[in-house]
Image (cartoon, rainbow, N blue to C red; front, side, top):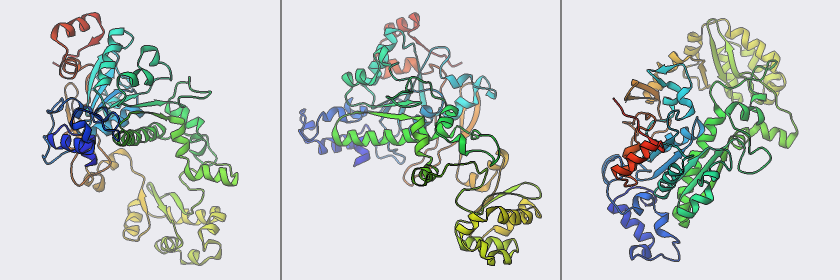
Length: 463
């Protein structure tokens, strides 16, 4: 029932919505369901029929939880696009608003390119439509407001105050679309001394302390191999928007959500932060090792590396058995994890010497079935030939209109009642401009032609 209230444009979901808010069925607004009609998804507010862009009818075998939910996406680069891509995977109709000409910043991030398309951009923009709008033009800003009025979610990642200058801030959108879940993604938040600074992953990783704790023990601070602060923020945003839709379902009102890189990364410091907050223990870099668990790190083998983690005393005994070091498991200095942490250096030297004597494959065979967590450090070729990665279906392939056949990492989560197959390829800049103006806003050809001729919008012609 809950998903029906949030999503599909179907007779069944309309009946469920009216059942929850009886006054809405008769044209009134129930005191218990304030602004009942605006609380419903855009698909229900507009009065029925199939949602724009098609989709399976209600009762079909692959109904997704966000079918019928419309998301207006003004975000660029990674955190925002990653969040909206995940929402699109769940069935939401994502309308990506881009600058005519340049589009999303990541379109220029390369090499590598697939044809003329940045592979970086392709990796986080599937299941979206693109409309190219010049928001600095009053006509363009008006179009965005009109799209907001028929959307369920408005997502942006501009410096606080920037969109308000164009009449597109939260208070502006709230006046015309009080039902909208408006989500802002910034570097540092909506208030405070740093809000006017631009926010990139590396800077937020530095300010939040992540870089301070990443790298070799005696080495320089290191940036993680992918933009984990951006990606964590994207996942927080994804969850926050889902919570916002549930909140609107309960209250009948939209709300503003403040997501930012700094807060996301500080929250993700978890036990490292708690060590300092409770014990005033300053954090340090441990390389692949762990500050509170030993052994829990990478060990060099004859031809590569293997990572082994003994999370409890029994697993440590098993590690010693596999390494043929029974005397080590009986040594009083290593009986408990606390003792192993205190005597880390001596123990790691013993284990490292033994691991260096065999190949990675041999160690993998010896650890198989032991109950001890282990794995080799894979390069990309090894990752995407790994049997478990292949089994989990973690590669999504699509036919792109200019790049041809492309492959990107797919969703990490599986669901028993629906699948996320047959994704739409990442759009070209303004690929769907005319389609959106006609199908969603009801613009006539003459009005569209005027917008195109003045540069307020742009349409990419796919050849």
